[in-house]
Image (cartoon, rainbow, N blue to C red; front, side):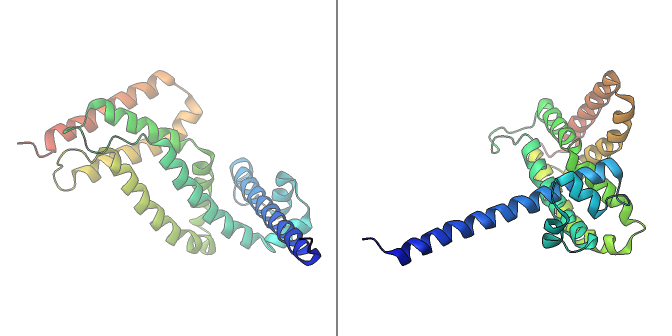
Length: 222
């Protein structure tokens, strides 16, 4: 039947859906622009006008979503944390569900390279900028602390899922995770500046050997 009221309602629903989608796209564009600004200009120079320019949105559109710099920074902190976790899970090579009785050296190497891939994502660089700035910015530190605790818990849980096969001595898997995590984090900045591929490869191979040695020497094997 030809019902004009129903047609108007349907048209209004479509229009509302499009407006909501458009609003979300604008919000995401602003947050992605904020990440790029953090990387390119640093925290103190990531201003709302600069974010607007980077995102290609008007000042009015920016103010509609984020009326102040504090609000866009707060939203960016949350967005970066969620993006980091998603990218980490995409980067690490999940192993088949506990079919093998023991881990191989290659299992460790693939896991290490997956974590290295994640640490070189723009989201991690933006996070590092926020982390350093939070040292002297109490308001930013307050924003980041609970999110960081949640992320670290999920990060280690996901990382340890790489190497859960076998029967580890208590604390040894955590030690391997810490060794990989802190070594690679320290390597990120150095590698960016030096780009010495041969040295990087040597470190990865040594780290792989050390993790595998710890696993073979300390896991519970009958």
